[in-house]
Image (cartoon, rainbow, N blue to C red; front, side, top):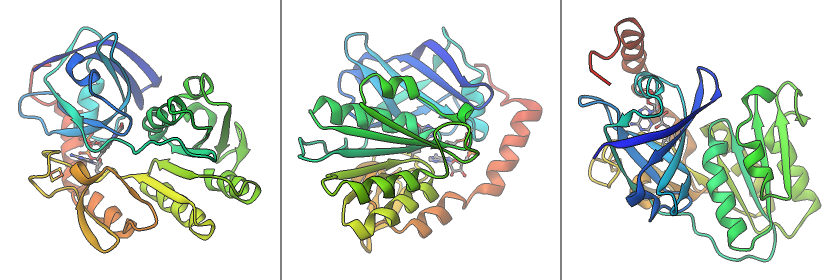
Length: 283
Ligand SMILES: Cc1cc2nc3c(=O)[nH]c(=O)nc-3n(C[C@H](O)[C@H](O)[C@H](O)COP(=O)(O)OP(=O)(O)OC[C@H]3O[C@@H](n4cnc5c(N)ncnc54)[C@H](O)[C@@H]3O)c2cc1C
Ligand code: FES
């Protein structure tokens, strides 16, 4: 069923946008950690995007995407008033959120900050003390800072070039926190695979529960096709139905990274063709 885009905000022009979409059936059930699978045009591929926020009252969900290739570039051509051809969700297992004694540290990198925002908000609503650590190459690429500051008492920032917050990586700030506070209950990380892997390695010596949200390639999103296969603790799991969140200390990140780049030549060709000729479809 087509879903109407109500608002569009260009967070990083040409790279990252936020869409607020009319989807009351999804908004009514969406929980932190859930995602949708959408198709922009009839012959288009299905891509998963995390639900960055959901509002049951207004019947809307918020998606934030980075333009990576053909489908996200095509999505970027849509504007408020346009329809997304179909939107399926909420999918995936929701984040396990319980009241815990110590702080929950939520770490986000790049576009993952938007997805992490929904999880951090869920922990805050459950009464947990949430500390967020966000990172990007430079200040202009930091997302959702104001949104996080609106409910989170501590938002720590790391940028590679030092243009905002600490110069360095999110893991530098994380390790300092873990060294100074032995009561941390859980660490949640959402972002690029190397970042989530680094977070899991940083927390391992401290023995702190670490949850990561895996962005494996997905096709059907309902456990039938096997595309999203990941290895966790030596067992095969399907990220779409068993995840996307897993124990970061048990994930085989090497395999995940290799599977994510398996189609890079086809993806590059497809994107170049889109940039030259469009997708030969009407919006
Ligand atoms: C559960 C989940 C939630 C996600 N949430 C977000 C989000 O909130 N915002 C965001 O910007 N991105 C998110 N992604 C990644 C997003 O799905 C890909 O960036 C998108 O599919 C790229 O498609 P493309 O055609 O533009 O680029 P392509 O050129 O086709 O691919 C670029 C790269 O994106 C990845 N990718 C491609 N197709 C898929 C696919 N069908 N499923 C998953 N990854 C794919 C691969 O790593 C690929 O190398 C999420 C992925 C998963 C699995
Ligand atoms: S996307 Fe098909 S099994 Fe998960």
